[in-house]
Amino acid sequence: AGAVVPALGDLRVRQALNHAIDGQAIVDNIYGGKGLQSQQIFNPDGPAFVKDLNQAYPYDPELAKELLAEAGYPDGFEITMPEIKGDLTQPYITQPLADIGVTVTWDKVASENVVGDILGGKYAIISFGSSSGHPWRDIFKMVSENGAWNPLHSTTPELNELFAAVQNTSGDEQVAAYQAVNEYITENAWFGVWLFTSAIQ
Figure 1 (cartoon, rainbow, N blue to C red):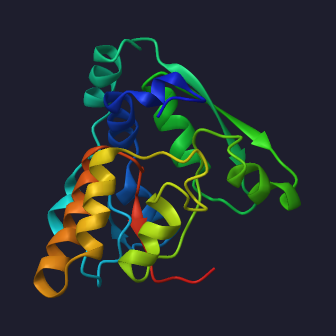
Figure 2 (figure 1 turned 135 degrees about the horizontal axis):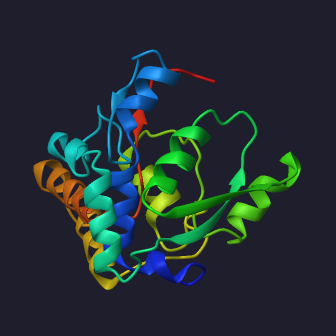
């Protein structure tokens, strides 16, 4: 919402960050092609998954630059992210973001402090891997206002209405309600999702 890094409160900035990262390059070069390039947090085998959303933000650095300029950041801005031990994606984040003018500083945090710092809301943006299973579990963990992995407690009235629709429906109606949640958070670029993989690390 922009509380820590004001630029991130602008939808166009968040969309730019999504367009700047090449998820397929991560799939190919880190996972040897064994993964699914994706831009949504929900499991491909679950009811919230919407296939078309996998191409919500195609890799397009030039469009990313245009969006930043429209948002008032033609020269980019700076962000600090925690360095998580064993994360192989850093080069696929640092250089592409630098190419659109966004400078990433990786904060070297002691392993025992990383989770506490993240969940305590120290960082506006982080890079990490997460599991995905039942969509309500994913919502409760990642998206709900008091979710552990929503440490800045971001929410909107529209999103709360969509949650209520999920809770008050069943069957096909509930599937549609789950997909509406997915569409909302993807279109509003709450996350920058690059891939799904079945690899366990």
